[in-house]
Image (cartoon, rainbow, N blue to C red):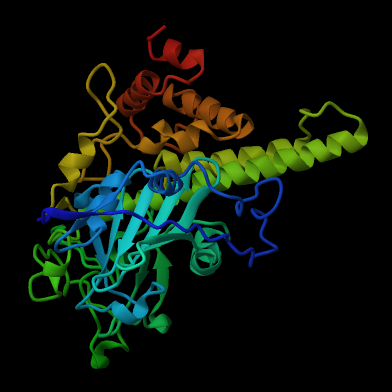
Length: 437
């Protein structure tokens, strides 16, 4: 579906300093300093390459900079998900006829609206979490990349993301123009959400049997009192006639991609919150220790309790403890499922945390592939160690048999072995438990 690149375009780069509008936020200022210049998220790395002349973005005849931007950020085309609700700062251009496209990779998110020169970007910093940018394609002056904390955190740093910078999938009930009808409700959806509450204001291509969701439907005036009939948008496999699909990179808004996106956004947020909140706990403890003449690394009971609470919340999500069973088998319409599952890494038996189930639940092995990522590796040791000790006990069957009863004994063993083979930084007891010692 991608047209051939025709022109190389140099980038005139401008990184705007973020404004600290949320001056009371715990993540602003020392010790976290979310507002400081970014260096480690993929968009910041892209900016550095462009500024140094190490990379140029190829202009596509039909889609402009989008294909080159996705390639530079390692974001697959098959991840495309289309949202037609007016839930972006580019609302004037978004409608059921002209939806916004969302693309995602492991550490980057890209939003693109047909007809707009502005791309919405989020890059995942391994310690600070999502950092927000726009890239404006000015054909005369050259594209301009700017950090956008002040604007983006108005929606991406409030209650929807636990008052912390975060990415999200939001389900609303939109009218025929795409405007959310707020009295009908608005939910942030994750892998823990009931299937029937998902994807209001999104296009969804794929099959899901008798299960119902809120996608693919814009409410006519006479329907705004009762809300969306989940049957109306069910099992849609083509978007022809519903939107100007030819303006997009692919003709899909893949059901499986949407489900992985829901899992990943919340996981990224929880990892960032765990990192930041643990560092705040340790910072306060160090200050107290200094005032009392204690060793700087000594932990009091309150700090230990807070770190355990942070670790437990993260562990519950990463092990899919509260994922409801799928009401019916599902399938997407693009190549996303196969492409995603093929990316590994794999253990010595060829198993991967990216393997999909799609019959009873999302993943074959209910443990997040983000356990293998940099954000998890870079968690403060004080909270990461709690997660790993607790997780190992669960996977060995020595704890959590009731709370984590969704994991069968063979599944616990498989997850343990996959992690032991694919995460080299794990403590030695993991290799011993997996029989790798």
